[in-house]
Length: 436
Image 1: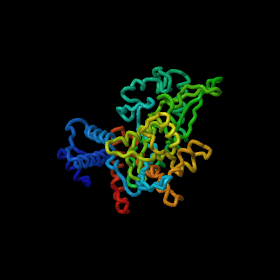
Image 2: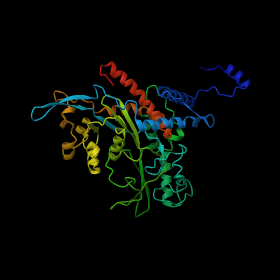
Image 3: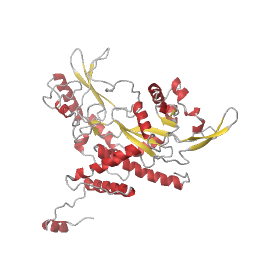
Image 4: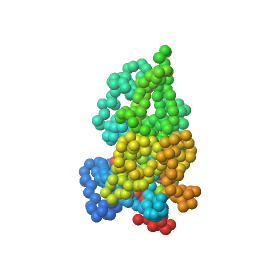
């Protein structure tokens, strides 16, 4: 409802202290309060908020409490099963004895959404402000040279007095003014959006984020500095056998070639969100990965999700680099994973994995598991690409949540997933899949 200009003026003249313009902050507060009230009503508890402090901080504790509860006990649909994601199948042994087994796989995949985070690799402490490059614990790094590996104090801009470092910042700033920067803006604009969602990303925030992989090289003979840019490879599961350090340290010199440097001029973003989805489309978990989509993190997430009281461990994990996951699990020697089949999803196995990759073909081919095949053995019983399909939906919120800090970000994603699950279960029920 809007007031005409005359009525608004009359109220202002009478001492009305509130504005008349509906802002995104008002919409967020209304939506968040509605979600919090809905949650508390369902649990028959009161919603308690402080009466003092700034409005932007009043909901933080309540949202954080809800986030922690979902992390500890899972999404409401964690225990979900239905005829579309669960299969009762017949097993016949060598002697002809018939028994029955249960198969309910989980499908996992990563998506790059990314929120601002501390520039120190894999630091999970929150930023005090989403314009900062470092968290409170590492705040002193705002005053150190932005070239990774250099601890000298800044003299101007974001680098020290070293001429090569100053040249790197000049090249980076020139890139920001170039046509290449316009291409990066086009990248952001082409990200999918929900039909009924509005992007609310401040322009100044966009300019302080690096969308691609950027590095500098210094010629050993001439000391000339050159800037290089490569497209970010996005989400793919990788082995994580090394120490807890960046996968490609900066200031390194290869056997041949120039010296290579990286810098932290812009804010770092979290690497990806990892989802775990039932084959019917019900999302059971989401987790933020900071440094990379390391398969050790996938294993840790899976174990944490399915050791919640009452949760049932899936018979199979279906993942695009399940061969790396399986080898990582074997190297860890954790018996929890010994009875979990690990298969590459059908599309990736056919299109991304070499037929000569012996380990993958021997241990991670879904065709080796009859319970994953249809009755005639010529098609697949389960939709093994469901996580990628879900992540297309999740990617529609990219422009809405990319500037949120952790509490708000996690609350938003958990709530959107919970609401999608409600709609998914209703649809499964209407289609006769008997969701429970």
